[in-house]
Length: 184
Image 1 (cartoon, rainbow, N blue to C red):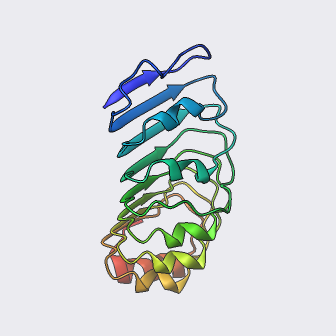
Image 2: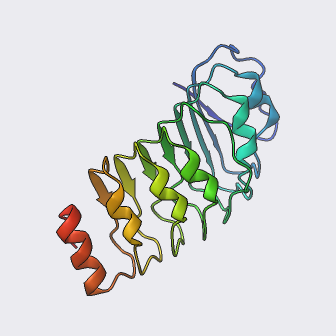
């Protein structure tokens, strides 16, 4: 993986456009630079921008081969409602941001096996999550979740659920323990 610390004057055009994995790090940029779209063969994209204010998922349609996407440690609190065409995405990591809600389209990403939403401000999850038929790992630690909907028990492939440091009552904890054997 090519790891690049971006500054305002950094150019990505010097890199091989056939790169398949790239990590972009910035303490100053508030949006994803358009030069990233030159890398059409990307399979793995990591964006760690501490000032990222907007996450527009439509930009990821430029990467039809993307199997791994991580956008972490940003300042954005919501994601646009437009569904990208990420038909190969297996892992989606949106941890340590300021997300308060999630768009329904995430439930349409049926190839997702790993979903990490830890360290946000989520209160609930969209009902469309029940459509994540290949989901194996779901991380929801350090959010504001007080109730988990019963649809979570219908996720047959889910074999790891992490949901510590939320606002679950004893009844919710017991239901999750009974089904997933989670210790709190």
